[in-house]
Image 1: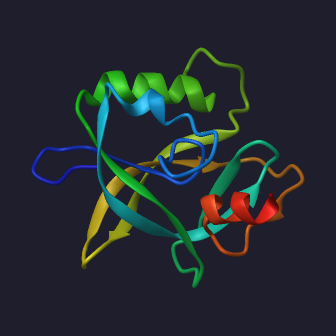
Image 2 (image 1 turned 120 degrees about the horizontal axis):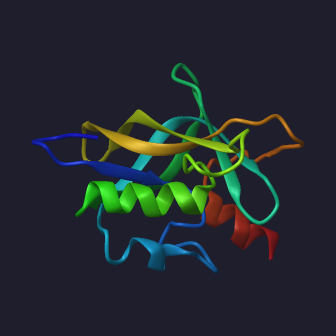
Amino acid sequence: MTAGGKQYLFVYGTLRGDVPNNRNHLLHNVATYHRPGKVRGSLYDLGSYPGLVSETHSRRWVQGEIYLLKNSQLALDILDEYEGCAPHQAQPHEYSRELIRVHCKPRGTLHCWVYCYRLQRGRTKIMSGDYGKYLLAKR
């Protein structure tokens, strides 16, 4: 989240800029691309979008992108709405926004906001941990 007072977001699915049919336009006014990153955990195909389950001690990695938030509160309000976890939206929320340590190149980590999947409905694991590659392979 913060590095010198800055807040960051890690995206791994439909908000990634390199994913076909992405929704990355939601980030254009509120964030700027920072660098690639990865987190420990498992990625699941939930139909038309993926879900990340954070697993701190996992050997599996989920690939994604890190964005620097320009206006943190506005960005998080927009993204909470998009991810279905805004306070006014019906419970249970499918996702929760959490601060997670994200590994980035060349070396280092950043604490970033990440939307983590919370429910247990039917899930197909994406073994590569890379949603973009997974979608291309499905075509």
